[in-house]
Length: 159
Image 1 (cartoon, rainbow, N blue to C red):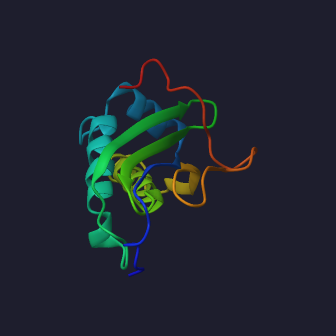
Image 2 (cartoon, rainbow, N blue to C red):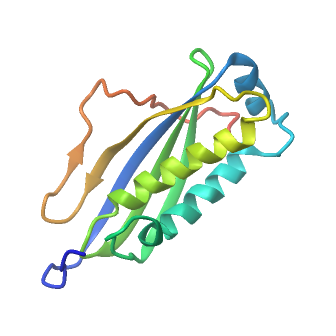
């Protein structure tokens, strides 16, 4: 573990994304709420939040952080049968929250797979990436335009 004791506390934010690609029938069932396991969005949101809070237990050498926000948003794209997932994490501390945001997006995507796997086994989780971070010594960083991630405003019919 890296010694961060000499660093000053600062406000830190990280945004990460993941994309879940699936067949039309799976996407339509997910959006209609017609899956045997229940509400995909609520379950994936809670899973992502829990994952961010457990990041230091899952990733060796990660510092445990007092998170002040974990937010999970969904961006369905009916044209490509993909679900974009955006995880935002915030803290005030000595080290960044990139790993927490990436873990939240990843576990939310895995939860979508778990919720939909009875309909389709070939679901693909892809484009897990850091989209933006702010705070700390390195300041602000944003993924270059044209990244693989599907991003846009959340659909109005998404919880």
